Length: 223
Image (cartoon, rainbow, N blue to C red; front, top):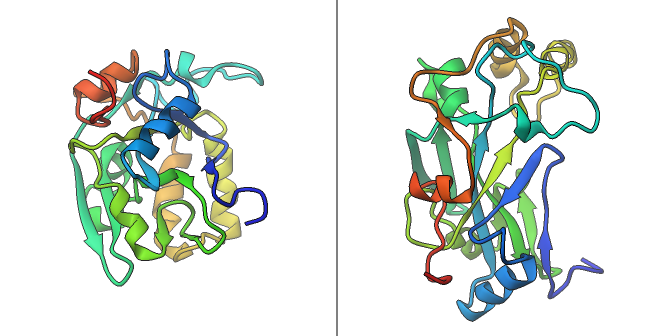
C-alpha cells in the first residue's frame, strides 16, 4: 500500500517461477509497458506443476541447484475454467495434481489461476493468495489457458523431494487455510512417494513450448 501504489508489482510464492512471452529478449518493464498500452491492470498466469520422470524422492536436490534441471515435465491438459460469484473470480482446475490425487473428486482439485503481476492501488486487496482480487472487476483480466489474451505461466516447483517430509508435517499440523480434513488423503498420498509422470506428460523446453500447447499466449504483443 505504501511503496507499490500506482506501480507494477510482481507477487510470487517462493516455489513459483514467473514465465511470460518473449522473456528471453524483453524484461518485466517491457511487459508492463505493453500491458499499459492495452489498458490492462493485471496479468494472469496458469500455475503449472512440474515433476520428474521418477518418484518424488528418486533424485537428489541440493541447496543452490536449479529445480528446472530436474523438474522437466508437466501435464498440458485437461484444464477447465469457470467463474465464481460473488467476486466473479476465475477458477481453473485440472493438471497433474487432479489426475494423481483427485481422480474421483475433481471438484477438490487445487486452484491453478493467479494474477501475479498487477498495477497496484492501495485500495486493492488479494483474496486467497493471488488467486483473486477485489475490486471484483480485476478478476476479468485473466480468462485462463487457451485464450487469445496476453498471459503467462507460473512454473510450480512444488514437487521436489522435500515435499514428502513437508506433507508428513502437514498431516500433523492440520492447519490448511481451507478445510484441513479435506487434505488428509492428499498429504498421505504424497507421503507414499508416488511417480507423477505419465505417457501423456510433456517436456518443458522454453516459453514457446507453453504457448504452442495453449497454456500461455503472447496476444497482441509482437508477432
